[in-house]
Structures are given as C-alpha cells and as structure tokens.
Amino acid sequence: MNIRFFLRIDIPIVPLGDNPWYNEGMFYQIVSFVSHLFFIYMTYSVMVAVVDWSKVLKGNAENSVRIQIFVLFLAIAIGYMVSNFFLEMMTITQNISESIRNR
Image (cartoon, rainbow, N blue to C red; front, side):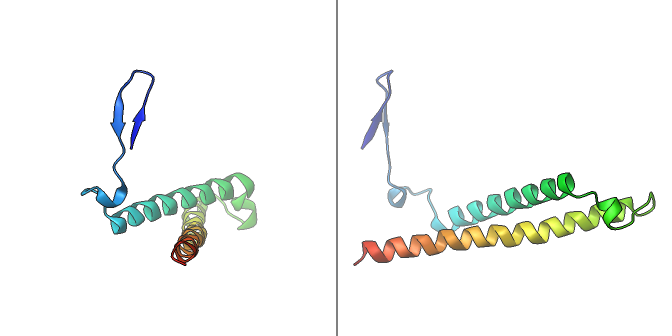
C-alpha cells in the first residue's frame, strides 16, 4: 500500500507488525508517559488558574513556596489518576475491539 502525493512521490506504508523498529511495549510506554505529562500539566494549569490558593490555605510570603509545592504535588496526583483512567479506557476499548474481531 502506498500513499501518492500531488508531487507524485510514492511513500510506502509498512504495517506496524512488519516494522523491525516497532515495539508494542515501547509504544505503550511512550504513549503513557506523554499522557501522564499532558494530564499533569493540564491539571496544574487549571488548578493555578481557577483557585487562589493563598486565600484557601491562608498563605503569606513565608508559605508561598510551600503552597506552590503543595499545588504541584496535588496536580501530579490528580493528573496521574486521570491519565491512568484514560489509558485504562484505551486498553479496554482495544480489548473489546480485538474480541469482536476474533469472533
């Protein structure tokens, strides 16, 4: 199977199973790493934008670094759990599609 562009360049499509550089375990690890980082970043940015933590935790100049570290750790915990949820949903969907395909 080839993809032909307007410049008449043929790009061969190699199935992932036939590609010697493709490793299913490594692919899943890269996807999960990127997913964790993405959801941790999204959680942290939402938590910083929505909540004024200095008012919630009665912070002052002495506690500002501690509050930022607390928010970072909280964002890591929540982002990791959300990422695991989406990765698990992806795995379940793959398993269901494989079981339907193998019927």
